[in-house]
Length: 122
Length: 122
Image 1: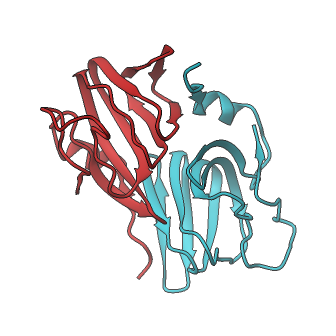
Image 2 (image 1 turned 90 degrees about the vertical axis):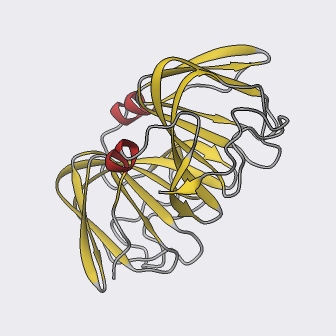
């Protein structure tokens, strides 16, 4: 059988939780995850993986210790490993994340109310 | 300085060549590439990397030795390493590829008229 087609749109519509990345695909040692963001996250970094944010709808601000960026639909950023960042979204924003398999959403931060682990497959 | 915002839309608008992947971002040992497809490609595989196709506009058919899939906007597929495939698009289709850095577009196929190498940065 050929590889399965993955509908990003349908997968995104299949859950409502915020800040809870869902795994939709694996490539080499990386996972593709969908996440819905609204409100404030925590400062954290991922010591062993870069992390790509690809905005599919809405917009997100990402604070860094040395500045802030705003990402709109059709834009992406790669946060290098070890770089602290804190996402924030005024309104619900839908993002495709790419990062090493097993990456915990809150990275190096102490376990907190935003910690949901490394994501479940949907 | 914070990491640069990458506009996928603007990068896609910045070139017209078909079948010539352009690198827009690096994550760990992977590259994100934009490519415009129209017409027929060659049978090939990539022996050392999986390859993700994420369709941003249009649609593409990908033939496999054991079947065919059709991908529309908002859909993706991961072609496992070593699996032969042949993309085809009736009309121009825009795709975000993710694969190991250094991957040549025609993979294991003998160098041919579609071979453009592993892509240039834009």
